[in-house]
Length: 340
Ligand SMILES: [Zn+2]
Image 1: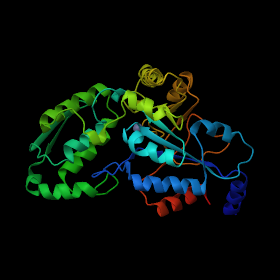
Image 2: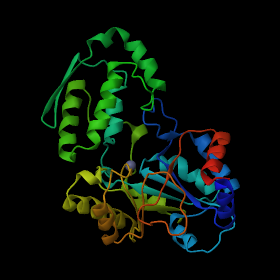
Image 3: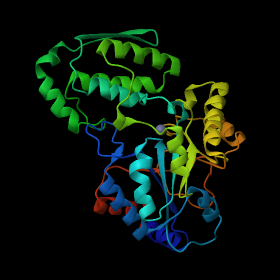
Image 4: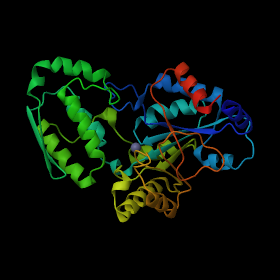
């Protein structure tokens, strides 16, 4: 019965899926599963076109107002603003004339810093040997780790690093465990505290603050290049990529408005869309949603699964995270999400 109702509903209004990508790049390691290989991304685009009408986020609002749609819809989005979105993703999207929206965190424009999860990866999952003891004062609590046992197993650590990701149940080395714990902890720390700890970690590990060219975020010129031609829309994703729900209203307002105005200065036009960093229901609050509305955005994307249908909350749009799946698996998942 449920299946029949679903089928009848899908015949009138099959729904719009908003896909969430981060990077189009071959990454090794890729502990957060953020990379989709360029060849696979091309396969994804071809599958999207076969299964649905690929529309822009801007036209989604119009679509949701239609009493009936012929085919399912797909909107492609990227979070964070990695430079591969311009250099690897855009040429493929241009080839197939597929629109997308890229949400950019603006605090990385004009510097060579990496996002903090990438920097933790560079330190803990990289090849450089690390000192035997790490002690950190996090949020007033003293934490200490001993890495001595790892020293003899450096080769093991490296081999395991290439395949390992945070969804794995086990940590193959102490370095992986520390990486996992710090990723969890760093997300909810105030930016200043995170920066202080990152500085301590760099000194401890003997590494500089300059990021890897492979993990670079878009520069101002690259953001303008990305938006040129009108196929790719640029949206805001705060300044420092905080968990907004942990900030005061005033701090949230600043993160949200400043990222909008920085992008508007670069692009010379209005920025109408926003996506919540991390985007799970506990990563933002009702206050956050009001602030986003007041800041003059037209819509905002979250990061909980679902299909957008008429009546959807335009300021908490659901999205489906896409991984580095080969075309066949991607198509199976798409059809499953649509209930086809
Ligand atoms: Zn993000």
